[in-house]
Image (cartoon, rainbow, N blue to C red; front, side, top):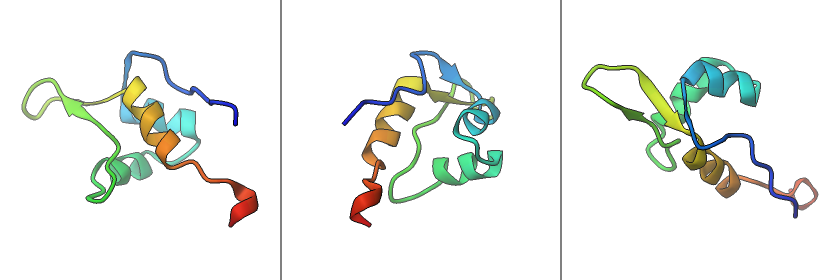
Length: 71
């Protein structure tokens, strides 16, 4: 299987992640707040802006990858 790398090693704003994944920004926040398998995110200061590390996002996406022929 070919590895798909969507993100680099920088941190992304939720709206950037939404644009790259072609989803609504609320979907990104929903994944960040998911209790079972959250999209890794961090705040550099209390109440500060949310940032999503690119490499962690790639790992999170790889865990969620499915084979469409096995559904």
